[in-house]
Image 1 (cartoon, rainbow, N blue to C red):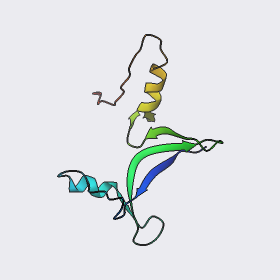
Image 2 (cartoon, helix red, strand yellow):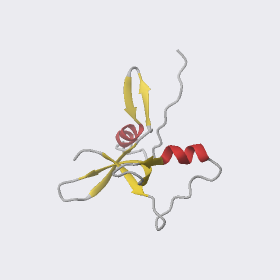
Image 3 (cartoon, rainbow, N blue to C red):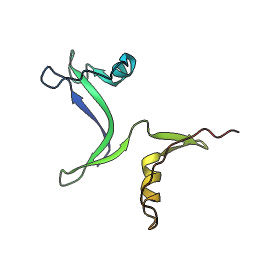
Image 4 (tube, one colour):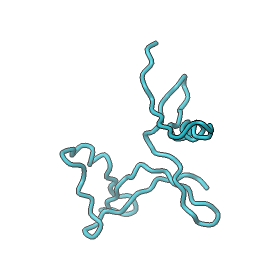
Length: 100
């Protein structure tokens, strides 16, 4: 029931060639020595939850949060609530800088 990070093992049969022209971004997504020395995983940035029937559900994205008045706000949670409004067909939420 607790959210966990989806990581994918990188091997010769399941390669991750990286982001085009963005070596630093690629390095930030690679996790080394996760379960044993020498292994390599890709950090998807997706948080998933497994329910009691072993179904896997998307929960949130890491990095898709922002600070507002000292609180962490999940853009996914805000979008989910706004999506409950009958007249709303599509929702996209992102943080912006507010002066002051």
